[in-house]
Length: 68
Image (cartoon, rainbow, N blue to C red; front, side, top):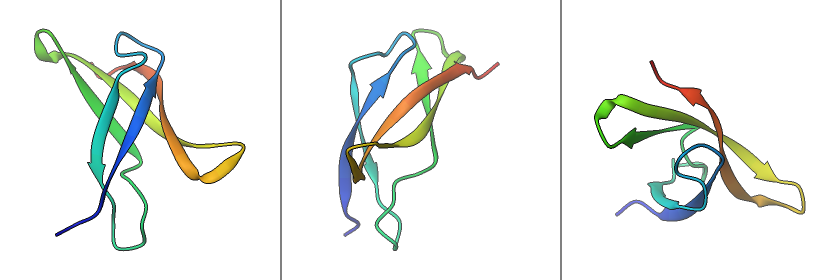
């Protein structure tokens, strides 16, 4: 079974929510997260992985804009 981690979303409409993602074989989460809006893919937003400055083993997904 793959390892998972919860990562907070920062900015956008999902600000403050957390998502659970699987870690790759090197122990890293996916580089982006596509957060679905109320209308599904039509309202999806893109979040990009960032390391937290105080701890490089902690991450957050920061809002980058709408997917469409």
